[in-house]
Amino acid sequence: MKLSKQKLRWAILGLCLLAAIRVFVFAAAFPFFNNVDEQAHVDLVIKYAHAKLPRSIEPFASDAAFCFAVHSTPEYFVKPEQYGGQYPPPNWLLPQEQLQKILDDEIPFWESRLNHESGEPPLYYALAGGWMNVGHVLGFRGLSLLYWVRFLNIGLAAALAWIGFAATRSTFPNNQFLQLGVAMLLAVWPQSAFYSIQSDALSPLCFGIGFLGLAKLLQNERPGIGLAVWTGLAIAATCLIKTSNLPLPLVAIGAIAWKIFLGPRNGSLRPGLITLGVFLLSLAVPLGIWFAWNHHNFGDLTATKSKIELLGWTRKPFSEWWSHPIFTLNGIKEFWPDLIASFWRGELVWHLQRMASAAADAFYAVSSAIVILATGVFLLRRGSKNNEQRFILWVALLSFLSIVAFLVVLSISFDFGQCPYPSREHPYFTSGRLLDAAAVPFFLLFVHAVDRFGNWTRQHWLRWTLLGATVLVLVVSQLQVNAPAFSSRYNFFHRKSL
Image (tube, rainbow, N blue to C red):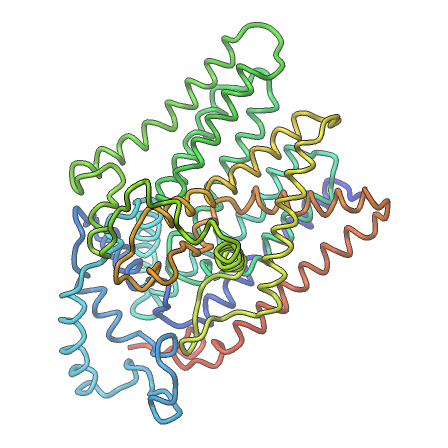
């Protein structure tokens, strides 16, 4: 049964609402400050809110130190047994004298520490800092203001579901299964980056917009200048959120250049060259400004040199890269499941234990590997009926794999010294949130593989069954894994004014 345009639009709006509700519930359930460097990210948000952009690896700000001292929970890093079986009450409930003693100890401690994330790209922190200022004007203070900043992710998650639908509709305008399926998976995607103050929640939205623009550019023989501009700006914005997203512009430039010079065309090269030139200019200007800022203040283009030195990493000679365990079967079995599972469900811990389901993690690793391999086989086969759709699927696949490859290169090119993660014992970048930018392309590939399987078996009901089963796994595992956070006395539901 095919839905009318109006009913389809209402269905997608319902999925956007579902995404917003999901993020609100879980973002409110988790207390501050989690194990994914949330202190570092909050410190940067506060500095940007005060228009104090870091110019080096700087200490934590006093305002941030105050937040850490008052609003932190021990539940991520300490087991209850260390407190006799029950955690103490939140610091903000203590009498003023006891609280002041904690402040006198904790604030100088944090002010003496360096924030290793100081050189991170600015876009998310500028947005979140502005959002914090809005909350301050509205009267939010203390813990309520911190949650106000975290709740920015509610809008990001809702918009992501819509962008996933729009990007899929642009490429597959007559396939409602794909359109609904991608939006559905994005609406229930259990990535814990959306339940935290951190930049990874913005990456998938920005590149989702960029991917939508790429799809339109690659299907239009004479795209408008405006389309090339906002596509370039969206992909530049993706890199201004996370340095690990830098491979994505290379994929986009390669795709447009391939389309212009090697793809079928009608007429002269001039329209395509104008499109490519405008796209490159829109991409290069924001990135060039960022690179210049970094070089002037941090001494290198990406502001990563100081962070690498602080963490104690050293670059390995090129000849030593190839002895890395990732090139063994055991290494692949260690790298891929950890990376892809954390891409699906995040990296939070609780009482020092990873918040994960072994069964769900196995599903993530196996199903994702099958989708990637099956898509590669399909795209390499000849005789596709729609070369434009095939080409965009190639772009989606390469977008995802380019970041995976980047993480592999990072894993093999450094000696991590005494760093706890990555480490010499576990020398792999397996933070799946670094893949978040490619969420829309990945879920397009996932649902497309399900659709192809249903068509291949000629059992069209089977694709809806597989999609429904996937959604059920995501919902049930997320509820099961995140359930302990709801009982925390430190979270939004148990907050009291300071």
